[in-house]
Image (cartoon, rainbow over all chains, first blue to last red):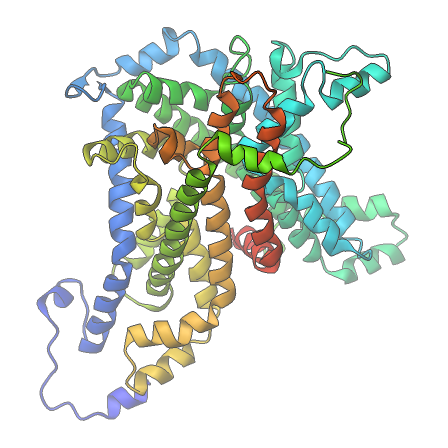
Length: 321
Length: 240
């Protein structure tokens, strides 16, 4: 390719258009390539500006204003943020509840998915069928999930309480009970999350562990637990880390399940942070305050991700290093 | 209500399905869902592959910077962009229409899809492009006649993932759609749940029939394209 260009006799020095020279492009061929590169990038350049970067700036601005759509935004300074922290009865409880939910769903979900992935990695016949079966719940739309489980958890006729009654236990009101609604939502989430994407990613990680290492460990007399602890676990820490970061972000965003199954109730027992943002912005149309709540959420997610990245140096092992 | 309840009826009540269709505008919801999902998925696949081609094969100032910004947007929670997007669509008069549910996906189809396709195109040998270029093929021709046919597995992955994401989407229809005849299936199912039991009948069984009808297409698609779907998720996870 390069040869072909050099052997072409260049009598008149080829010209690069002004825009190309401004961007530091030397040859017409490079300029042509860059032009087509920009043309193909165009849909995303527009999409990024209109639907992501523009809205980010707008929402940052709105978070310092009072804006209820009908009239123009009124600048408030930090008032929305101060209000959220000091004046909003539901702010801290909803944030706290969201953390409790994530703290239960993320570790249990990862543990369950890892166990299933290890089972699938044993190379038993019919693995593909089980992989599909384990994966299916995560495909169920959250609305259908919430409806099906509302029935399973029904206090009097739901199968769960009927079975409990057979065993002589008086089952709780589950989704209708102030104490049990949050645990019930956690159970539903776990049912959907265990065996989903994180299991597939774990499975890929497990399949990337070289067989020789297991053989070497077996020759050294390591039992199956020792092999898991000393060979598998260190080598899948990157996968674990990836799933952990995604898992936390996903859990903190919990919305649809609670919205459909309990509407945040009873008496705010499942009122998560995302529901709080939704109500302020799209039921009360307090767009300024809603934006402030959203930005507080972004900062929390950034802090979490940053902490995890810092801590990851201590426990994540990259075979390439 | 008998106790203990009978969980398996003596005879399957197939007419539950026809009664769902009588009670709520189920066909209309299904049509709305199919419409939105088809356009959003096709738009995502086509526009994301064009943009991925640009990121994977062209050299131009600013490319890597824009690519990093693209990756960063994957970490961004939707709540931040949701409110200004709502205001934008409100100004355009698109509230209570299906436009907000598919128009944004014609512009690159989202960071994740672009990323996945870009990774895939980079695994294809560059010599193919260069040979075609020497033969006088245009960039568009290279994309359309050489790279696209070779990217079928990745394109199928993106199509399946977008289909399921849009089919199951609840938050966007909830925010943008107000009147029942405009609902998508996911939102309609929730509306159906809250329909008062004025008929005096327990609607539970009808609700279950409706749920099955909402889940079924996703399952069928998943079984048909399982290999691509699993590969896609693993690919995104491994290269994360």
